[in-house]
Length: 440
Image (cartoon, rainbow, N blue to C red):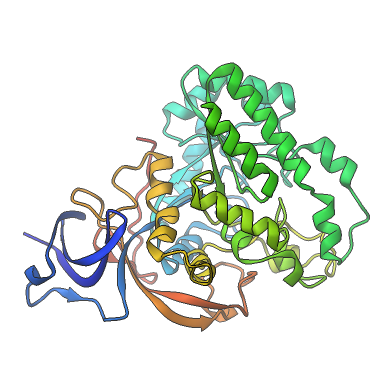
């Protein structure tokens, strides 16, 4: 018996669009048939719609518990569903307590369980006080361990100095755990510091590419020594792309991600004082952006994730436009796919390639074999997407707790019309059905 049958002229299967009928039973895809196999009661997509796998976002700051005035599981997962994201993995900060031990993980799970509208997994944290005790969190099911190599912006999640980075890589190599790294070097940031203010170029100058490449170099040195695994978060610097490309050619076990805001915004178009665009590392110039696109297309950069890092409007606009004072994070969970697809169309990059960066690649990175694809046996996490629909983003459509985003006012192409979790449309007003995931 099937629970749902969906038919469409364009279904993304094995990286290509084709006419198909998708049969769903017990929350999973039972089989994929020909379009002409669709029964009379099948859900037939409109001619301007395509069927995509649910997106998997492995870089989301939900902030609950402890900073729920910034965001929370109910609002974050509502925004995720509105953007076609059916699985997210929550970062170990900026919640209080941060997820740096098993007790804190249980607190996080207890907060998520009654509120999650989509499936959720969790990262652990590698901070100075948690070193030597990471295996317990790994055994409890976290997907890996995040660390900062420069101050994180919150006191309860301190960064690792070089010796501590080496200790973390040593510890994780013993059980093949994954370290995910915010790679900026604090010494470079100190040397580049300036007086701040509303001028966006001054902010970019305060966080130069060298900060990224120096920090990534320290991670690569550790991988050469240990043979372990690491992942570079939110790559923004062109020079880092070649560095990662060379490391992969060397055989090091390194992966990397970038984010929609680096792919669609550039320095020249960010007005002075527009702190809604502040993130760390920063959005750089158009030439740098071209290199990031090239890194995605040749596989050097493995995936695209939101790095959704919201705050209250008061914190985001603190300092009256001073980029050194305002909170550094972009709320992008709801608009990642349309934003990147808008720019991809301009560059001649096909939709199936873009969707792969957000779904199959992220699912494979997280080891979630039943996510991110439309295939027999996979979870029936599905998205109805209209690739040619366009609209200007307005604040009143934001599902975040705080209706602040760099995307407000931008014209985007592509609209999510329905998101299904385990074959059932996500209803933000109904009882949450999201499941808590552990590392496979």
